[in-house]
Length: 292
Image: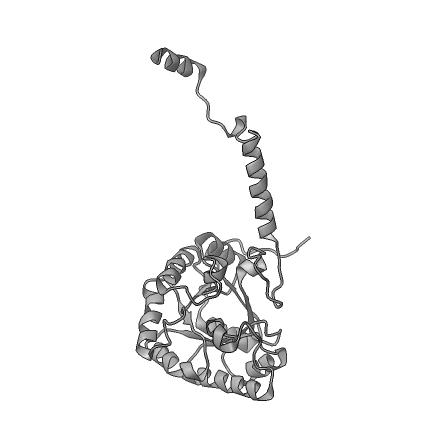
């Protein structure tokens, strides 16, 4: 039986900020982060005491059913960001900038990042890429918008990478990732996601930069961890990455519940008397007199 006591309500917590991230790194306290795309999930996470919620472009796959993250649009991302912002009041909220919302120019990147704060209720944005994104990061940070970087396996570059493949596994690739981390730190990023890179490399990067690292498939040496919530809950059954720890199997539970519902309706076990609204006999008798 679990002995973990959940946080009773999100209003009992102070708002998590980018400063909180840096302070947790300095104290050696792990940072917790998960994805959310809707109001009830965000509220539950906030009450559980999560440090940060990422409105991830992973919603393209786990919510909208696309094959990868590339098709999701700014409008779709903002729609889900607003829902999350209504549900979570204490966690640091990060909006994931979708494909082609920041790659064309630093000016367009800044404009779209601003929309995440102004229209989406987010506290910060995340974008993928290393040195090639330094100008965009500088422009966004220069306007007062916190930026989380993301290097290693960058899903928006899935075609360029040749699939969802781990990165930084050769000496030269590892050196480039370390350089990219330092470049993003220098450009003003407040933290950095490291995805699918060797644990030893992630630990070295985490020690060599002053900003917090958030790992996903990058080992325990990062300053924090993030997972896609649908993977954690077993809600997405198309595939489960190797680095995911599945804490529940909600897809199987949903299937069981839906199957039982179909059977109950077809056999007329549902709705039963306890699920039914009734009239008093005198009202029913009066009604029957009315329709004679």
